[in-house]
Length: 251
Image (tube, rainbow, N blue to C red):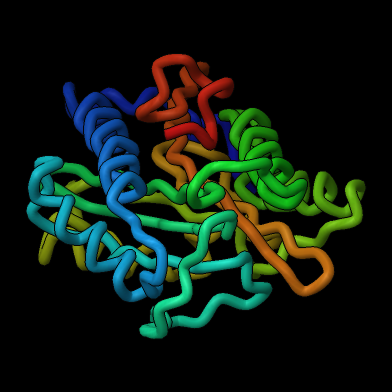
C-alpha cells in the first residue's frame, strides 16, 4: 500500500537542475514537432513523416532517442507498429505524430495531432486534447497512477468513447541509479514494466515524471495527445508548458 513516504521531497532523488533539463527537453520536443509539421507535403507516407521528424531532431539539439518517433494518418483505431510506406497524406487529414528525442541528460515525450493543411478540427481530435488535459489536471501527489487511468476511462465513457489501451501512459525515469546505464535504453525498458504503467491495477502514488496519453476510440477511429507531467509533493508541472494546462495540445 502506498503511504505519504512515497510523496517525500525529491531533493535527493532529483538533483538540482534535473527537472529544468526535462522541462527544456520537452519544450524543444514541442518545437521540433512544429518544425516537422511545417515541412509536411501532400502524398507523404507515415514513414516519410517519421524521417522528417528524425531529420529535424539534431537541429533541435537532440543526439539520441528515448523512443523512436512514429506517425499515424487519418485516426486509425488500432495503429500499426511500423509506419506505413504508402504515400497518402492529403489536405484535411488528421495527422498524429509522437516523438521522444533525448540528450545525454534528459528527454522529451510529446504526442501531437492536427489537421494537415488547416481546417476545422473533428470532434475526436478536440476531445482527445480535452482528455489529455483532464488526465494531466487530475494527476497529483494524492493520486495513485491507477486512479489516473480510471479517471481517464470514466471521462471517455461519459462521452461515449473508450480508452483503447492497457495504459494511459507510464512513469519516465531520469539518468539516475539503475536507469543511468546504457542511457536512455534502460530508462525506456523500465517504462514497459507493468509496475511503471498507468493502469487501473497500479496502486503506486504519483511521484516523479509521467507521460500521459489517453487514446480515445469511437466508431473505428482513434486519436491521442501526449504530454509530460512532473509531480513532487505539492509541486506539479506540465513540462514544456509555461502556461500550464491551457497550453496542452498546442505546438
